[in-house]
Length: 196
Image (cartoon, rainbow, N blue to C red; front, side, top):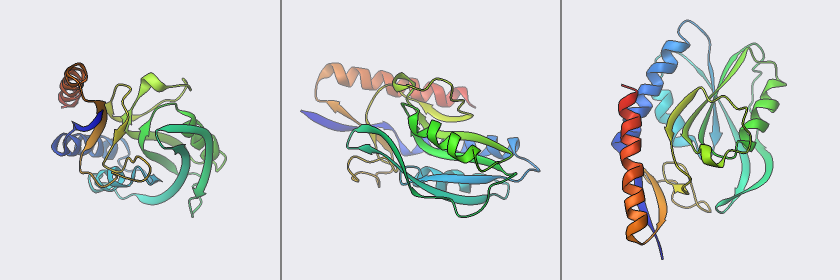
């Protein structure tokens, strides 16, 4: 039997997002910046991140589809594209999670054709164990997580659980899994402290 457990609580999430907002603001000081939110998963992260970025930034949204249930279909489709030209602009893609890297590779190639000045990536979660595309540089990472299926704070399972205020994971209901989960939570707290 499986159950849902909190992996990253709301306080930890918000503290890390404040750190990211501060870092991005410093890195783009006196420069133009366009933030691209990847819907639907990144919408909560994007909103909180944007509120913590102290420089003026333009906002665009894209909707990309590649998941069916818990698995990536491997095929990336653009459901909603950006509205304005990004030619000559600094672009920051804001994503909820990067795992296989296929969607991000597609996005980078697609947006590069629009001739921006620069493209960088900010993701809330980096699940590197699942990476299939190695040459993706992620410039801003909220948390590195192990190979768990995560939901909440924008992330879904068949369009459910997006509105949870924290990141949850689905685990087997046994002592072994509980122990692994507690170790993961401790590791995530260490990551947060290392950015202070």
